[in-house]
Amino acid sequence: MVIKTEPFVVNIGPVHPSTHGVFRMRATLDGEVIVDMEPVFGYLHRGIEKLAEERTYTGCIPLTDRLDYLASMSNNLAYCLAVEKLAGIPVPERAEYLRVIMAELQRIASHLIAVGTFLNDCGAFMTPVLYMIREREKILDLFEMVSGQRLTYNYMRVGGVSQDVPEEFIPALSKFVKVMPGWIDEYDWLLKENEILLARAKGVGILPKELAINIAASGPVLRASGVKWDIRRADPYSIYDRFEFAIPTGTVGDCYDRYRVRVEEMRQSVRILKQALVQLPSGEVRSEVPHLIRPPAGEAYGHIEAPRGELGFYLVSDNSIAPYRFHVRAPTLINLTALREMMVGWKVADAIIIFGSIDICVAEVDR
Amino acid sequence: MTVALSGKKIARQIEKHFPGGIIESSPQSLVVDRESLLPVATYLKTAPGLDFDYLTAITAVDYYDYFEVNYRLTSLKRNHSLVVKTRCYGRDNPSLPSVVSLWRGADFQEREIYDLFGISFEGHPNLKRIVLWEGFQGHPLRKDYLQW
Image (cartoon, rainbow over all chains, first blue to last red; front, top):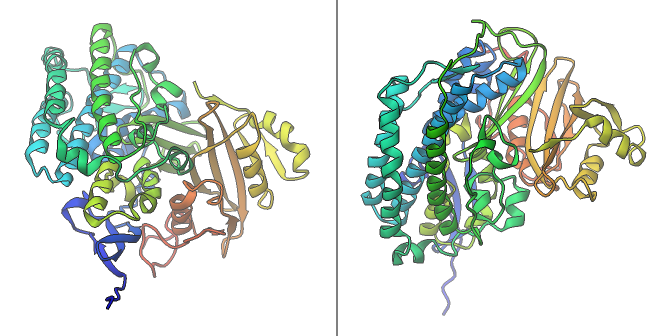
């Protein structure tokens, strides 16, 4: 006799250790296999786009910190670029370099958390993530030196950065870029060919190249699917055209590729940091900007390659002191579009890994 | 460097395919009417030389008289971009055709516009609120939305 089974619905989340925030996956299961999945979000919606409409242009910078709080510096940068485009404000040379240094340090810090928590989801509970938090701590110390904060830095300003770095910063950063490659080698030595990691992540949650482009995926998720697209190279902003770096890509677009792309990107970021340290000029760090910025009526879109993908700010000005419209192109929201396709057919345990490999930040998804 | 294509140039190029469909064009963008949105989008996606395979972002702006919805298109193959805009009149039940059939990336973003601006997208496979809960009254990003 064959026992008939019926599919049933399980809510993974909203509060679940694997969802990295308050995020719900409404999964329909047949036994242990996922047959349908619908992401449900909005639990962390704070209406940042609406809040920004009643703040001054400078007053919006702290709001951007709270979008992707694992990459606050990158958010600051993208927003400031959009305002500078809108109002035509120049940025001094030294500030450009400081911005690149902060953005690349932030990329490393963000990828460390991404990789660490991904391995956590794979079952390597707490050990790898604690190694990576150890390294991230060094970066947070550097950020604390320049901004006094460890999570929401509010460091960049329209037309530069808020203040120059203290004198102990450069020696500390030089030391960091010297030791970081060794730490990345250590992760590779521990994990790259780890049998359990390969068994869990290789071939799981494949995002084909065509689908990745069609859903407008960006960042490591797009590159792991074999698309060589990086805004830093494709549409260089700030001074990224002055640095040499490679764009790591994957081949099949599975969880393992996404993990590898992130690790390789950390190496490339260290490369950029080394070059920036050599080239760093002296001088002003902030151009003359009025306290209340009043850009001419019009619109501008500033975008950067944030750790999680293309982060863009679309601003519309009506020549007042607050943005008329403030829109965030959130990379993680759009990267989640193909979540269903990536998960269907896999088991619940694999779904956790697939979700972890996309690396979302719920604060940015919901805004 | 991503080349931002001039809306004016593209308008001249595609005008003959969509007579009367293009309302206005400027170096920054191309404004099409509601009925021609889907045909123009299909053309831009498939025409050789344009190949807009990547829909970077969709947003709406409330200008009181109308809602402007803008589509930021990019071609990864040719590394160029274009902004296509459309206008949507009426505040009671504005609607636009959905582009999800062309670019799946529009899925969540159209839902977000529906949620926060109240513009419905015809042909969207799963049009419902995304960040606010079912039963929420009003659309907060409209300029006439009262917070209290």
